[in-house]
Image (cartoon, rainbow, N blue to C red):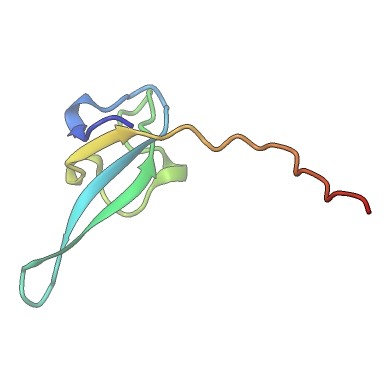
Amino acid sequence: MSEWQPIETAPKDGVKFLATVRVYSAHTGKLQYHQMDVISVDPETGEIDLDDDRGWPLEAYEFWMPLPKPPTLTAPTPPPQP
């Protein structure tokens, strides 16, 4: 898998990718966690595709990386016959 890259270099052609945004506590202002979302950028608008909108603008995300390849499915091996 690739390393995290600056969000400015993310694909803007509709390809889905993993992106991360920092989430801070509303009470303390401390970093709570990094939220990771699968998103894509609409090539016509340059904004996050509506189907991938998680409530954050593209500018809130800091880093991205390509999605890993999905697992390959293999047919299960039938149990041995007695």
